[in-house]
Length: 597
Ligand SMILES: Cc1cc2nc3c(=O)[nH]c(=O)nc-3n(C[C@H](O)[C@H](O)[C@H](O)COP(=O)(O)OP(=O)(O)OC[C@H]3O[C@@H](n4cnc5c(N)ncnc54)[C@H](O)[C@@H]3O)c2cc1C
Image (cartoon, rainbow, N blue to C red; front, side, top):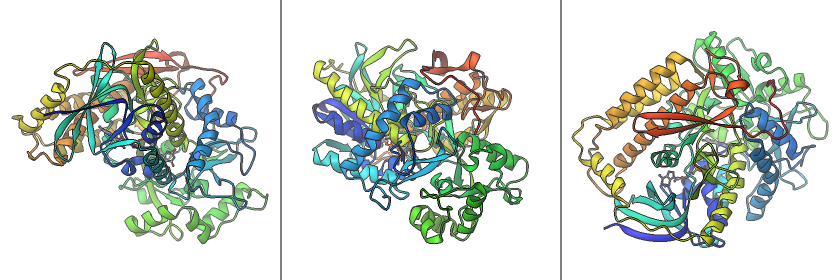
């Protein structure tokens, strides 16, 4: 028997965006959070480096500088009205978090400490600016703990380990969601006036990734199946510094604190690619530089990695060459103890997983799949926009990494995702509660959960013999090789063909575990289906875009082409067919220019 529940607002996902949305929605609306993980195990907890806001605590800074850097970082694909809103609101968002009790690192005089991060600059000088607010290198962990405690205090209702399989739309408006209770294997029907998707990213479709196992793009896949397009899916960020082969992320804060990238010849090669801000150029630029160095045989020992060096002697050497100073104007110098205090978790990861002590030895790093710029299209209130004309789907919202507002455009700056979660999570929560106050429930049809039930039954009892682990491995390798840092027409066409094959094979999968309680084989197979849908949409969107912009680098079309491609992609998936349409980018005050760092 399917259990039934009814709430004004359902939030799907208990990460930073979901908790922020729930916190604000629950002030006036009956709200529940459904999460496949316990909320504090969400990927937001892995965020290390910080949250960007122009507080100007250590040096001059302005939200307009933050906005310009974000527009430039996005390679002019970000919507500038949304970016302006976010960068203005970022300041309040950080103080909101402080007042909620977040233990930020502090300056000696007690203000929130800030550090430099890739692509964030003083617009007057072009030099890196201290804009990232942080709690050592565990900022995301602190955000999750703080928001979760606030939600508990406000008695938000949580359904932990409930896996959302389907979205119900009736009369063109939201009616609810269908979820699987992982502990029992039972289906639950949640009727709701408004649903907010905050399900995070989909980086598990690549072989080397910094992303958690849960990053399977469920929210985008569910909405795609219900006819909602996915925006700008060809833009996926590769972070330049994942630990070689493991993908474990080494935060950009390491370079913010003075760490440098070194090739096999001992050169600080970023000087050639970004003469102005060098190692702190935006991530797309640095990842491509690593790739080109390795392609030219200058990876360490000719291998597919370079060194990230944060040893005090190296940091002090290059800081002196760069003329870097402390806020009081004295020369920038660090000791091993200071490095240890600024990035304790990173040092711990490296000692544990690599047997390398970063204070004494350089770390081997390679570009690693990291962040989805694309996702469910929304406006600045978190409302889902269902077509190129801007038509809002009544009651449907999205926020956080699964959404595309779009503030990150073709490439996100470090620290801007945490800002996005807090600013747009709050906006979505407030707007959903307002909407629910004036809306009625849509009637649920008698067969509301049939689609989800049939699909699950097919996986449990199908006649096929394909093994999900094999298909997953092939997808991840294919995506890393053909839909990675650099792309070509030929490679993308091959990717589309092979992804179609893999999707066909995935329909022949049968899970061996017939149990009901915590059947993760079943859930992981469902997730593989979601990843394959999104992989196909990503490859098709990338194949169509015949230019290079931000994270989308085409070897056969190396230039940005504003005349034809200054526009957002909207992809729809029907069966095996992806159809693409486009919508304009909103430009307010920053006209597209060539990007140099
Ligand atoms: C290693 C790492 C370091 C990072 N560092 C930084 C940083 O320093 N600064 C920065 O700005 N950004 C950083 N990022 C990016 C940033 O952390 C993420 O983009 C952001 O935390 C995503 O938050 P979210 O709320 O959208 O999703 P998440 O925090 O991942 O939450 C997703 C939630 O959705 C739930 N969910 C998913 N699918 C379902 C389903 N089918 N049913 C029910 N529930 C579901 C999950 O249980 C989870 O609770 C980092 C990312 C990584 C991977």
